[in-house]
Length: 216
Image 1 (spheres, one colour):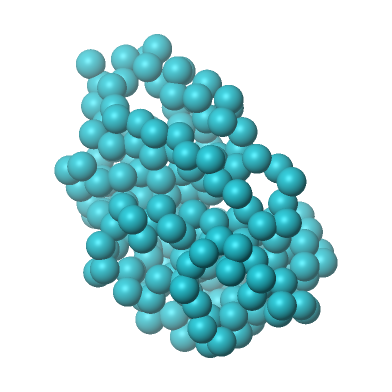
Image 2 (image 1 turned 90 degrees about the vertical axis):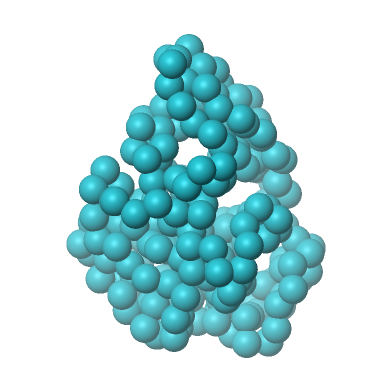
């Protein structure tokens, strides 16, 4: 595994990190590679591909979380899967607490091992469907999850007032199309779509940020 790829990627994103941060991210990639043949966590099998497509992609949202949440914030990662972006963000932001919500048992088993292996005291695993989550969070996020219009009714009740829902999306046009569908279904909200550059990744990425969600 090329740790220099992690270092240069984090530098390009412009977020603070230490040697321990890089080691933790590298250990996380090793965990994915070790268990991927059994748990089918990601499509890539090469370490550098995993770093770019998943770790740096998740890390690219970090500046937005640092801007929109305060230290001590509790952030839910909906349908976290392999812990993306939640585990990456928990490594990069040890002063925030992340709740990794995942209903599939095999993925939960991986998450439990990874959180223990990485000694992540600021990450916890919630084995449930997001429909069954009763807590309210300072922010929620999701990556490679359902379209906004499929989950909005489950997201709105678990957000504190004025808390952001920060969704990782692909092309801007796709994110804006999902927002148009929501408006057409009678939802109102404050929204912003931010372009995000992922180091070494050619594909366009965006963050779709929603606040004050309601339905008329």
